[in-house]
Amino acid sequence: MTIEPFGPPRPTDYLANERTFLAYIRTSLSVMAFGFVISRFGLLLRLLPGGGSVRSTGASEWLGIAFAAFGCLLAVLGVWRFLSTTRDLDANRFKASATTNTIVGWATVLLGIAVVLSLVRLL
Image (cartoon, rainbow, N blue to C red; front, side):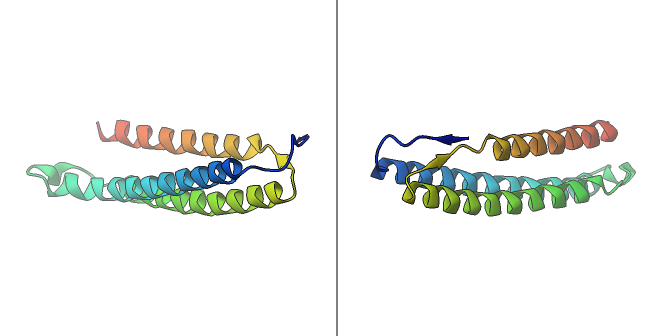
């Protein structure tokens, strides 16, 4: 869906695009850090006193890797969105991309469900 332009792009449009890009980068770094924490959670449980009885399923390592990879993909997506929006602003057109946001949202939900299921298995 293309929205008809209301005039040339303003500097605030470019600054808003930059803020959105930085939000993508902050989020991707947070997701990668969260992945690291998840992957080391199983190790922490085994190192705690009495943790030798905790059986390792390897789920925390794989979930951590999945979150780290998802964080990397978010960073790539942020760069792509920044460049395409800048290109659209330069051409005096704007194209909404609700599909991309929906895909990222559902991917986050699925990874969250995987974390909850792995935590329930530890109980």
